[in-house]
Length: 377
Image (tube, rainbow, N blue to C red; front, side, top):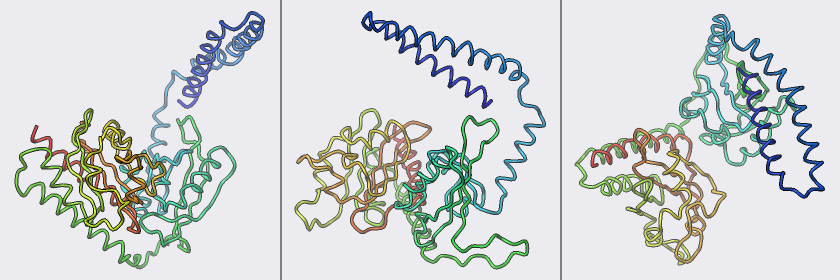
């Protein structure tokens, strides 16, 4: 399978080069010999490389994967899932391919939620660039690496991340296997022992999230809303203050309409962005909102790099800069793949940034809000 995919990539590259040669037919007459030499080189490449490769694939590729191979793959997957150490399989961009049971407990992130998202997103912001760089080095064959990072949910606890290259069966490219361990932690013994001491701060944050989920469910079920905008406003008021400094709700997908904006009660500085500024803003001018409405995936950003991600106010200043946004969540309100609207949350100033656990909880609430909106169609 891996050989077939590599052949397909090589063939696609050849097709692209042929297209370039066709476009080069309009070059001056004196330059045509160079184009002709290039075309002959490409034909030689087909004759000497691609055709023999194709013959090998047709000779060996039709047999398929044997039953024994499939059983071995299942066994290896089972071993991976039950390893006592937190282990993740990622690609060169740190995107999670697999996360074992121990890793879900260690990071506090569900495997289904983590898959397809960068593992670097679970780390504290200062560690992300170094982790991405080391992962890329391992993937390109520069040898195993080890570094100390910090999880976003537990920034005070150093974590040892050991990275090694791995070529999974049937995969076209090299993957990276990551083993995570708390600094100073020992491998678990067969005799067992007392469990880890609960983290009071983490327990408190978890309880606060459960209270928030309960408040959202109560608000959506307490009395029937008459309009979709009313559902959005009710949900926004649950999240405002206790969970986010700013809550902006936009209804629709192809055509977005801003329905609710809730911001800080006091504005000590005249340079601060005002609620009216965001109410007057066109959601279509907010790239972050448009992307969420089109792609249907949650965006979590800490110290947003693009100041124009939420557009500009009437004065032409970036909203994220004027509001002093230090972290944000932009969540599509989707149900069965259909986006009903977009909810954007800002935290400003010294407030603690949104965590992955909070992003998960918001993602869960977004489905409940979308369901309440869909009932009013």
